[in-house]
Length: 450
Picture 1 (cartoon, one colour):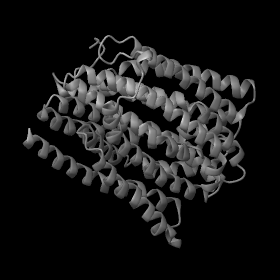
Picture 2 (picture 1 turned 30 degrees about the horizontal axis):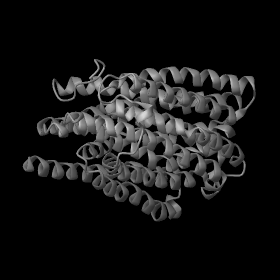
Picture 3 (picture 1 turned 30 degrees about the vertical axis):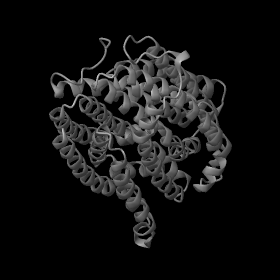
Picture 4 (picture 1 turned 135 degrees about the vertical axis):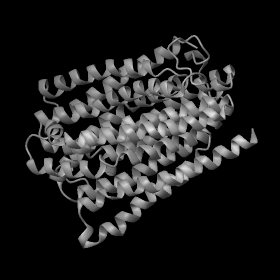
């Protein structure tokens, strides 16, 4: 392994987990800044209607791409298992199977996203005042979505190998480019949402190229040789076995979020603007929490390959403790600074600012519950038990939210934003408890069979 890799099989778990997770947090924050820069620039120079237009695309975009992002999770876990078991040939085959899988996924997503953008947005009940701008943003975004797929697959491989710093460097470079191009396209060329979408696509292309070069320059089994790309059936089967449930789970999560977004749309474009700005701020809290899920996946995966069950168990509880501390701290901080932060996005609507604060209070403050749920899910996936968390999450999060929307939310007294957003913390808490119990059951069964 190269010297930049984190050793997950030896040494202090607490220090190792912290040093491994911090670059993931910083990388994820930079990745989220792509969308934040979009919203801030259009909010400053184009108005709240353009903010609503960009925000309206988030739920449906995630619904479409999350299925394939799940396959990148499968690739990362497969690499982690092979590295932990010192199976260099399996690592090589997985890397060279993952790349064509990423490329094919990107092409398919481009066809679907570009061809059906307006149809999807209409099905979500996007208002006519917002729909044309939203459709333009989606079409340009999906025109370059192959870059997103390549980056996510390659970054998953690097993290599975213990390298969380390289993706941070690459996203830093791409993030600066994105901000500069946003200003050039929107303020200089008056391209509105088309400008921010084009800037995001170009910056994602830069990050994809850099991460591929990083894999090509490695000196271990993860090194990528473009001429050796092919589908290796055993590795593809394992990627699909682990990644397919993760992708289905992500897509079904997005379906519930699409229903939430459709309900948000029913309150009008002013509320949509406040909700979109709030959702972007929430995203910064979420990615800090989700970083611990990625850590749990890869630490569990490598230690499972090495049959070090004691480290697997300790990894779970360390990640749960850290994600709680970060979630409570970050959620409270963002909520407390909410009025000032929201004003960066919205400059022309006091009502939209008020609506954004309502959402922040309902989601940011209890966000640590989502972190607990995600860590438990990640630990299960690291054990290779991807189907179990999928079923639990589909029923506990998606099922509960959908049931909530069609029962509680339909009551006249409860048809308000407060009751709509209350479905989030309730679903997180219920799902976490079940995921944790499932992990303990699977873990003890594996440990006894050792």
